[in-house]
Amino acid sequence: MSAHQTSSPAAEAGDPPPVPEATRPVRARRLPPLRRGLLVPAALPIAVGLWIASLPRVNVDAMGDLGLLQVLPVTYFAALGLLAVGFLAVLREPRVRQPWAAGYVLALITVIHATPSALYPALRYAWAWKHVAVVDAMLRHDGAVPHSGTLDIYNQWPGFFQLNAAVLRVTGLHSVLGFASWYPLLANLLLVGPLLLLYRSVTTDRRLVWGGVWLYFSVSWVGQDYFSPQAFAHLLYVTVLALVLRRLADRRRAAAAGTPSARRPGAFVLVVVLIAAIVCSHQLTPLMLITTLLLLAIPRRNRRVVLPVLGVAVGLTFLWDSTVARPYVSTHLSDLIGALATPDRNATSGLAGLGSAAPGQVFASWVDRSLTATVFLLALVAVVRHRWVRRTGLPLMLLAPLVMLPSNNYGGEMIFRVYLFALPAAAFLVATLLVPPWPHRRWRAYASGLVAAVLLGGLLFGYYAKENMNRFTAEEAAATRFVTSVAPPGSRIVSVTSSLPGGELGYDTHERLVLAQDPLDQRRLLLTDPLAVLQSTMDDPRITGPTYVILTRAQEAESRLTGVFPVGTVGSVRAALDTSTLFQRLYDGPDAAVYRYIGPGARPSPPGSVQP
Image 1: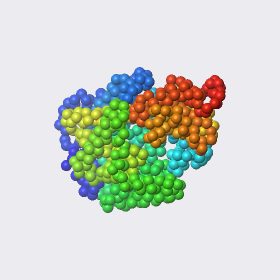
Image 2: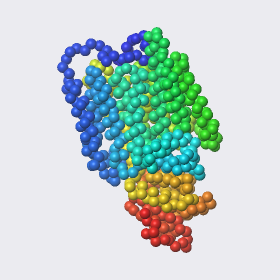
Image 3: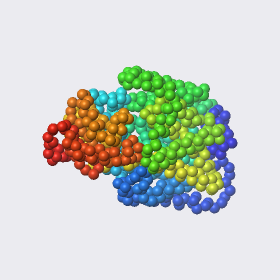
């Protein structure tokens, strides 16, 4: 029998058993120093103080191939280490004090996810800027955005953007930029509640509950917590599953006690509302939810609870995809069907293309893969080792995202999304191996702490290693605002790579072109004759306005880190434009430059007349 399990009538009925705080009498003895209660209240404020003291010492301009990892001072890592030691001390107490456990978890989230927001002068990550532009456009048009081009997909899944537009209307704010920078911190803090509800539906052991929550935030490296529909929908996804498992646990406990289960129509209405919000906000999350509910409905004892929720998810998804999202679904249906015929490429699409990346990025990528494989492996070991775990819905929640892996490559990101959706179950399963019961031998606690520390170190590589291309300087943001403000309707804005802070602002009036997304022959020509490639972009009859080229520090960093272009490509393009009479430089700085195509024989206007 597992140390986290006791025999009970509820266990015979298939319900995960309650776990007592102690499984056997404990002989009176003097507690070792770690259990005297001094470390728990002291480590937390000291760690937070060390983190705060480390922030002014970070020189983000010195980042290299490993991003923030290269510039964070030793006090930052000391803060993380002290948090880990303090949390271990919380779990080693005879009775877990939940306020302290919550404090350490919240501090861990803050130290990891608030650091970039506190250090950078502008919103990080180009995709977050894109979503800011969508909210801005929907706010201006009071709904769907006309002439949205490749971003029309957001008109068909607008829930997240319309919600933020409503927040702006209510608050009177002009842009979501003010809180989008802190969205990673907010998204992770909000996840704590659903995770607690989910894990408390499985066990009453506070060590396992809080250990699972700690491990979730220690290994969630994929970075899908930025200002995005995915982060919003994932929060709702975890909440729906937590409510379903809570209802299953209530029914089984009532059955074991021989009493009728109380009906909670309000909870079901809440589930319906959450599913509706998921369906109208994101393409992939409803499919992941349906797959998970299908697997949870396999055990007969679950069907009375799961099948109604599954019916709602299938019905709302079908209704939305056949009406509002029909243009996208009908256009890409052949691609979706074709992806089903190539499961091998779908499963490995996110692992290729590292041959010419920076050495630090290659190393970080292998750390990410090792961390992912380790988490899945430990979770599978937990399923095999603990029979009581197999009677919960967690193994099915772990398996469900893997079913989606061969179905579509999702732009090369499916393997990362699978890890994201499997992580709530995987983190708890790993906790059943690493969180020892009370009482326990000290060496086991230290061994578990060492493994947890290694996992946390892996998270830092995955979450921080690409920051040199994800962060933007104030000058880069200013240059982009300048070009999007002066570009008249019908213009085209060209960049070498997609790392641009706000290139999509006003996307309903101008077109965005990223040279890194051109065909291979065009990308090769850019290396030898950049002016020929840029002039070829002027021949598009759809472009009725002028063409602007914006080159930034982050684009060069992306070329170096990912290998999409050789090192120095952005500098070469900038040098070619500086010597060409076909382009006029409108904005010039060490981190950004903006050029306008004026054509042969044109007379450039004085630089001062167009400088911001």
